Image 1 (cartoon, rainbow, N blue to C red):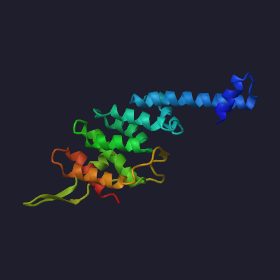
Image 2 (image 1 turned 180 degrees about the horizontal axis):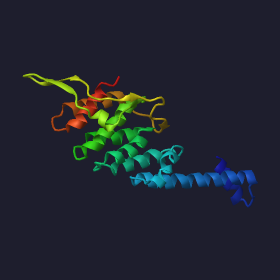
Image 3 (image 1 turned 60 degrees about the vertical axis):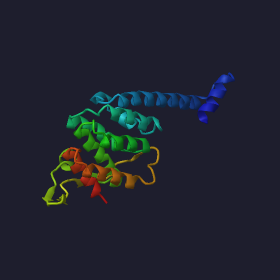
Length: 212
């Protein structure tokens, strides 16, 4: 509204006051900053000098989640744990429907690396319990199993994590589906039960199933 008023003043040949001019300049600067930040995040693998872009997207409305969804796709073939930790930790700061969908699809994508699929499952776990803290090793720790004549039964969950003092998901985008918890558990159950899913991904999914 303020921007519309200012533009109306300018169109009518009236010069806005210094205060109103500063508001208009700030809005233009904010918009440009959102565009720049989105371009950095969407291409994936921001360097250290561009790390400002992550937090800069928080107040940018739907631009932020859209940029992260595009960025997530760039990591489909990634095997570098450190690179995945850096980017996916920033993804974990978002609670957004489009990010949720992108991460769910990535977790189920058999053509993606097992490393990125584990981090995708971690995001789903954080949506269930935002105060949990897992690294890759903790999520992929081998579970104790008992093999019977009929089936293999997981006795103990192998995942090892800790609790955070502040929750993940503080950047709010579009609301999650009302049944998002059911969807997460269905995704995890599908991964755990499939013999074609890499074991590290299955271990991470097992952690999700045991998350309250």
